[in-house]
Length: 415
Ligand SMILES: [Mg+2]
Image 1 (cartoon, helix red, strand yellow):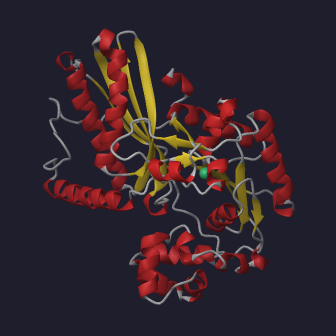
Image 2: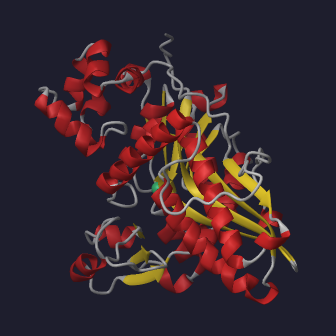
Image 3: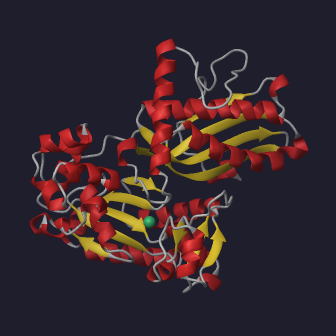
C-alpha cells in the first residue's frame, strides 16, 4: 500500500453549521448564543446544533434544552429549517468549487478535496482563498475549519482539532505527534463504544492503537474496518470504498383507484422501505430523505435532513413528517398521480459519525439489528414476510423496482 510523503487531501467542516446559517439569515441572532431544536419537539427536546457563542458558554450539541437553558439562560432557541440548510449547503459548495474541485460531499456540512501541486506546497493560501470565498460570496457568519493530511481520514481528524474557523496541516513528517494527543474516543471510527471495547483489550490511548499490528486492529473490530482505520491513522493512501451511489430511490405511477392520499401514503411507505432495504444491502447510511409527488396542479417535492440512518423506523419517521406537509398541500387537489421517495446524501455505513447530532446510538443500533434480521428473513423466503408497520403491496407487485433515480435532483425539482 502506498504511503504518501506529502499532504494529499483536505477535509472541510462548517462550524456549527445549522446555527451559523440561522445567524446568517437573521442578523439579530449574530453574536448571540443560539440553539437549533427539531421542528417537531417530541417528548424530549434536544439541541441539534448550537452557535459558537453558545458553545463558549458550555452548551453542546445533543444537550437537552432544559440543561442548556440552565447553563445559558439567554440561549435563543430556533426550530430547524432543513430546506434552508440544504440551500445554504448548495450555495457554499458552489463557492468552494470555484476555488478547488470537490472530491466528495460527505454530508450537509462536510466535504473533502484532493490537493493539486500548488495546494500541497501552500495549503494555508488555499484555506484563505476558501474562507474568503465563503465570507464574501455567502456571508461572514458561516465559517469552516479545514484539515490537510496524507489521507482523508487524517485530514478529517486534523480538521476537528482546529475548530472553529481553523486550518490544521498535518504533514507526514510531523506524524504521529499531533495525532497521539487526540483522545482515543475522539478518533472517527472509534467512538465511545469501541473505545470501551479497546480499553478492555488494554488499548487506552490513540498511541496504543497505533502500536497494534494491523491484524490485531482487525481482530479487535471483528472486521476489516479496524485494519483500514489502522492504515489510515498511519498515513497510508487508503481510500474509502468507492461511493458510486448518489442515492437510492423509487417512484411509482399510481393506478386510478390508488390516487387518494391514504392509498398514496401506503405506497410511499413501501417505496421508502424498499429503498432503505437496498441501501442497507449495499452498505450505506443516508442523511437526506426526499419525497416527491405529481399532483393535479403540478410537481411537489420536499426533503428532510436525517442523522445518517439506514433503518426502516428512522426513514419512515422522516417520511411521515414529509407526508404531513404533502397532505397540507395536496388537501386541495386530493389526487396524487405519482409518488417517489429517495434516500440521498449517502455515507458508507462504517463511516457514520455516531453521536454527532443526536445521542441515539443505542436506539439506532437496536433498530439496525432488527432491520438486518428482517432483511435476512425476507431474503431467505424471497419475499416480504416481515416489515416495520403494514406491508400491503399494490396489484402488479414490483414496488419501486421499475424506475430508480440515478441523478441528483436539482432545485427545480423541488420548486
Ligand atoms: Mg460541522
